[in-house]
Length: 385
Image (cartoon, rainbow, N blue to C red; front, top):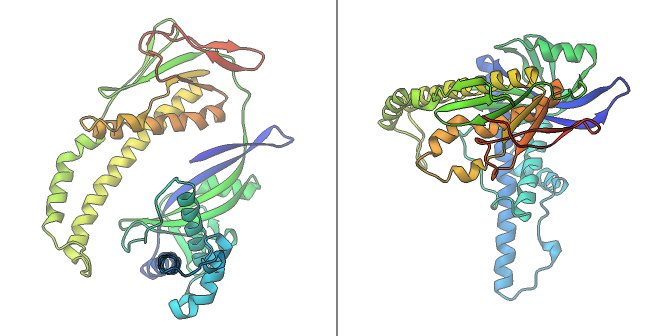
């Protein structure tokens, strides 16, 4: 996930906030330590949420009984308020809290504060308790994590962890001083562990190119991507590999096996055979998602490098997913991710992305009108797809 900021340096470079994600290979001892940190974050989040919820319920009961309740009687939900609440109760709630780093609980307070902020703003429902065994994560402060070399990352209290893949691109940025790690998060998905870095990178953003090579891209289900030039020549044709349909038979078989095992229930731990069977299900989902993401990256990089102006339709994907007959196939196509990647890659390579209004018929005509003074695309009409 990349966000280009409007921060310019004197050398005509831009400060880009960029994410790097690597699969790590911890030892059994390191796995236990990582799970301890992840569990500590989840515990602190749930404990603080429980204290706030209990306080609010008590005040609500007092109001119903006619007892006056003031604003001071309510526990605060800001980051600093939750941190103070944790410091006051951590000895009684978690006597083992010193086993983990301070950032373990700091980010739990920060995440809960964000959840309450979204709740008050109407963007989400009331915060819920985090379930054990779900895909959880733990974040570390900047000084607690750094790259030891291109194949090892050092985490405070964990040690040096080997990575499955080379981290040389990020390591070179840090060596040259053109990159700075802002945050690091260790997450788990199934039996795999990942580490994600949020990095501020100095990146040379080329000047926006003049529209000599223009392409209009239409997305679909039978043919995933179709592209044409203004004179009507079709230059892009990518068939839909239908990743989820291809893996459906294998996935159904794996899910049927997992359904016959003793899975997790309230108060009952899942069996080892269920964990093994569920791991096979998650492995199929991971492989399918990786294949889908790889195709999108290859296509968007090719378009951003080879064309000056790329015209795409601004689709209402969330609304289209309400069609239950096509929801699975639309989700598998990932049209929203395709557009999201084009947005930042066109900025990287000096090309321009034009989003067509969703009510305009892109399959009939489109044309990009280029303003040479402002170096922007103004309108569209007559580009046959």
